[in-house]
Amino acid sequence: NAGVTQTPKFQVLKTGQSMTLQCAQDMNHEYMSWYRQDPGMGLRLIHYSVGAGITDQGEVPNGYNVSRSTTEDFPLRLLSAAPSQTSVYFCASGQEAPNEQFFGPGTRLTVL
Amino acid sequence: AQSVTQLDSQVPVFEEAPVELRCNYSSSVSVYLFWYVQYPNQGLQLLLKYLSGSTLVKGINGFEAEFNKSQTSFHLRKPSVHISDTAEYFCAVSQKGNDYKLSFGAGTTVTVRA
Image 1 (cartoon, each protein chain N blue to C red):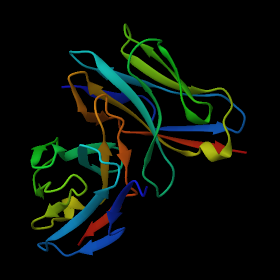
Image 2: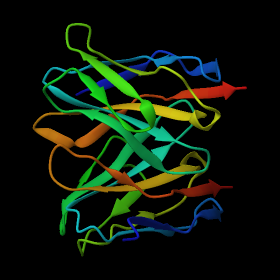
Image 3: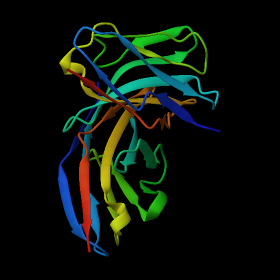
Image 4: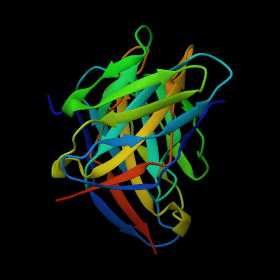
């Protein structure tokens, strides 16, 4: 199993550009989530999904969209990138409560 | 809502010395507690978790943590650290009944020196 994979590893955007961060898992997990990691703030939940077709907002959802059309994939879309979205983004997946979440390697995003 | 406070942002320690990382949480309901480790330029890996039962939890790489409900704490310990333990450590909590949503502390950077 590859576990949780994320692409790209690095990305540089200009303010106002849009892009999609990809996340896939091959563990048949129902639960998937996106976090952003900023220095001194730990990880903050952006959006999460408890199954295909079901998504919900986390702590910091503004400026991001998600969809979950399949169990395996959970892309994160930045509609109009802003410098405040410069961060490291982690995708995670898990199965059943209590949720041990498995994390991907991360995407480092810089918005100029 | 729950929240997590990690009381030390940086902990320098000599090799083979013990280390303790402090974590306090707040929640109006019962919780599950986790410690994750992040090695440089990598994702997060689960060290250990407390779900129920014995308050002393043992994890990977010789780490253990003790759940103290009265003090709402979940401190992480290792009796003898190695250079390879240099990493950032995150305490996280989820609420029972809403346990797919993790709240993380700000992290503690452990630097092990020879």
